[in-house]
Image (cartoon, rainbow, N blue to C red):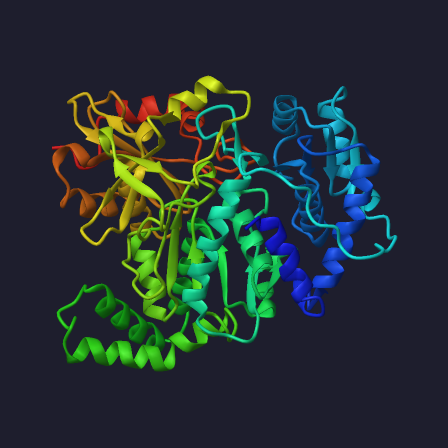
Length: 553
C-alpha cells in the first residue's frame, strides 16, 4: 500500500485525536489528525499555485515543527521530490547541496534561514517562508488523495553526512518507503503490545536525517502522538513533560545521561554511593559476589531504593529507549538495562532507507544491533565489510553514477561498515572499513572499539580518537576534563589485556572538543577523522616524537 495513502487514512481515522505536538516550556501544544490534514491541504494548494508538480524538487529547510511536518506531507502528496536540509548546517554547505539538486523552490522555516541561503547562493532558487505556505485560509472539502506515483518514482533526496568528503544525495523511492514503514510498525507493535491508547513518542533529533524521518512517518501511520522538543537546553524537562513510551536517541546522548546519573549519585551520601557502587559491580560482574546471594542482595536493594527514582526522570510510561546512528558502547546499554530501561538498537544507513537491523524487544543481546529485518539479506564481504541486499536499498546517488556504481555491485550495497554476525543472527558493528588503521608492522586495527573502551574508562572525557596509520604504534587524542594521570592509569589497565599491536602507547590531551561548529563533526554529529588529522597534524607529530610513550617497553 502507498505509504502516503496509509498516513492520510490514519490521520482521517484520528481526526479528533492529538497526533502531533510541540513541547513548549511547561505546556504541550498539540494538533489533531483533522487539523494536520487541513494544514497539508493549505500547503498543497499553495504549492500548486507556485507552479510545482510531480518530479519537481523542493528543498525543505527548517527546525522540527508542526509546519515542517505538514510541508513534508504536502510535498510528498503532490509527487514533489523532497530535499530535507539541516537547519544548523553551515550556509556554504547548504548552498553546495542546493547547487547539486537544483530545486525549483526552497521552503524556509524562518526569515533568518532564508536570508542565509540568499547570501550564500544569491543566484539560487526562489525561497518561500512557512508562514507564506500556511496562509491561514481554511482548506475546503475533503482531502484530495495523493498524486499517483509508481514504485520506482523518487520520494526524497537525503544528503549523507559527508564524514569523508562532500555529502551525496541518496535517492529513496516509493517502493523503499512502502517496504520499510510496515517493518518499523511491526517492531513497535512488538514493543507496545495490544493497546487502545495512543503511543506517546518524544522526538528531539532533526527530521531531515533518514532515521529520524522514518520514525516520524511511522508515528503518523500508527495510533500515536509524536511530540517535538523545542529547546535542547531543557531536554530533561521536556522528556518529563512529554511522558513518552519510547524515543529515538544517538549514543552520545545516552553516554552523557549515563555519566550524569553516575556523577549525581557520587554526590549523594555514603550510604547511597556505597549501595549503587556495589550493585553496579555485581551487575557488571566485577566482584566476587556476582551471581551469589551478596550480588543479588545489592541489586535488589538498589532496584527498590535507587533505580525507580532514576526511571521517573523519563516519565511514568517509558517502555524503551531506541538508539541508532552509531554503535552504542555495550557498557552503556547494560547500564540502562540494570536500571530497568531497555535500549533497543537499530542499524542502517541513509542508503538503506535508514534501517537494516532492529533489536527484537523480547530478545535483546547487549552489544549487538539485532537481526536483519525480514526480507533484507546481509553478509560479510572483503575485510568483513557488511553487504546488504533487499527492497530497502536506495536507487542511487543523485547525479553521481560513478559513486552509485562503486557502492552498488552485483545487487549488493556495500555499506563501508565493518561488522560480524553471531550464531543467533545478531549483528555487531565494529566500525568503518575506511577507518581501519594499518600499522607499520602490517597489523590492522579497527579504532572504534578501543576508542569506546578508553572513553568508558575516562571520567570527564568527551571524545577519544586513535591515530597510527602507517606508524609503529597507536596514539590517543582525548578531549574533555581529564588529567594526565587518569589517562596513564586507564591506558595501563587497557594495555595489559591487549595484544602488543593494539596497545595505545601515547596520548594527546586536546584543549577543545570536536564540534559541528569547528568543523570536526558532521551535521549529525559524526566524527570527521580526516579533518581531525589535518587540524592536529603538528600536535600528533609531536606526540610521536615524545621519548616517554605510555606503556612502551
